Figure 1 (tube, rainbow, N blue to C red):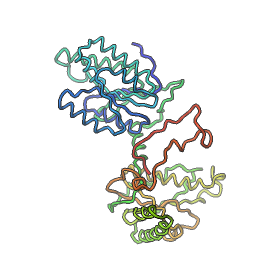
Figure 2: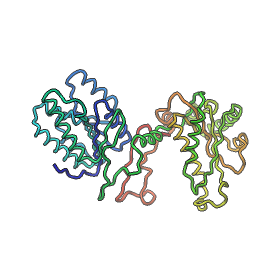
Figure 3: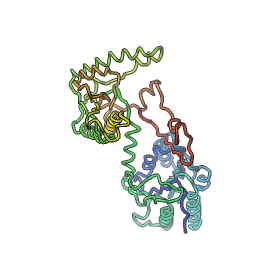
Figure 4: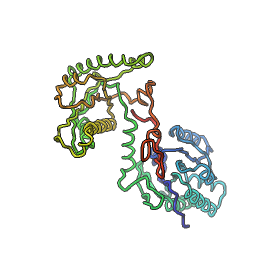
Amino acid sequence: MDFKPMASGLKLLITGGCRSGKSQYVLNRFKIFSGKKSLLATAEALDEEMSERIVRHRVERSKDWTTIEEPLELSPIFEKEMSQDNLIVLDCLTLWVTNLMMKGHSEQSIFQKADQLIATIAQCPGTVAVVTNEVGSGIVPDNEMSRQFRDLAGHINQRFAVAFDEVVMLVSGLPVTVKQPPSRSGNFISSTTPHSFPQTEKRGVYNAIYNRRDMRHFLSDPIHPEVVGRVLDAAHHAGSVGFMQPWNFIIIDDPTVKQKIYENFKQANAEGAEKFEGDKKELYQSMKLQGILDAPLNICVTCDSSRMGPNVLGRNTMPETDLFSTSCAVQNLWLAARAEGLAVGWVSILEKQKLKNDLRIPEHLQLVAYLCMGHCEGFYSEPMLQKKGWAHRLSLKDLVFYNHWEGEPSEFKVSLPNPPNKSN
C-alpha cells in the first residue's frame, strides 16, 4: 500500500521488546511538550494482573496527561481529539491487534483497519506517537494463532514504520534511532536539526534548566574538588561579547572570611526588611535568604571591564555587555552545579564596598554575584519565593512580542511550552 505524506506534526513509532522501557521513554521525551497530552490506551482489565498493570501505568504518568481507553475503534479518537497543538500517544499497537483477533476479525480486516488508522493519523496536524512491540526475534510460536499474531504484528509494524517520520527502538532501556525524521519542504518545519543533541542529552539540558533552584538550605558535606573544577570550567565556557571573558571566581572556604560576609548580610538584611511593611515585612523576616555559613563553599564572581583594553569588539556601543557576559558565566555555573546535584544560592543582600574590602577585591573590578554552593537534602519542588507567596512566575505569552514592542504575530507564531516545576 502507498501511504500519503504525513501532516506537519511529528509521527513517531516506538518499538522494542517487553519491559524494554518504551512507555517510560514516551513520558521522558514528551515531559515538556506544549499543548494537551493524551494517552490512548488499548489495554482492557480482563484479569487482576492486567488491572494492576493499568493502575501502575496511570500512576507513572503526570497529571498533565489525559487517558482515553479504547481497545478497538481508534481512528474516531484521532479524528475527534487531534489538533495542531496536541499530542496523542497510542499505547500499544500490538495489543490493539490482539484485541481485534480476539473479537474474531479476519487477517484482511485487521490489515484494512491498520491502513485506515495510518491514513487517519496522516491527516492529523498534531504530534502522534505509537508504541508497539517488536516481534519475531524470539522462538517460533508452537501454535497457529500465536504464529498468526506474530506475522500480523510484524507486517503492521512494518507498515507504520514506512509511513511514520521517525522510528525509535528501545533496547534495555536505551533508545536507538532506527529512522530519522526527514527534512521537508513546503509548510513543514522540522522541530529537530541534524545538529540536535541526542534525546537523552537534550533532556538533560532542559532538566537542569527547569529543575534549577535558588537554594538556601545546605549540608556541610565537602564537595569533591574535581566536581568544583567541572562547574567552574562550565562557567568559563560562557558566551562573552568580543570574547572578553571578564570574569574571575573567588572560592571561599575559610570560616573566618565567611563569618565576615555573614555579618555583612545580617546588617544589610535588617536594613532591607525596613523597606517593606505589614504582611510583606513579616514574610520577608520569616524567610531564610542565605546559606553563607552552612554551605561548604562560597563563590564570588567578579567582572573586570579592563581585561581586553578600552576597545572590545561589540562593547563600544553597549558598555554593559561585560556585566551581561559575566552573568552568562554565573548561569553556566548554576546549571552545571544542578547537573552535578549541587545546590546554589545567590546572595545579593550585601553591602558591596564592605564585601570588596573583606575579599580584598581591586577597586576597578565590579561585583556580580555572591554564591553559596553545596550538597542539599533535596531541591525545592518549586521556587521558594513562589512557595512562600512572595511572587509568582509571569506568563511567558505576555512577555513575547513580534517585530516591535507589544507587536502581535503575523505569519509566524511561537509555540510556547508549559513545562512543570519551572525554576527560579
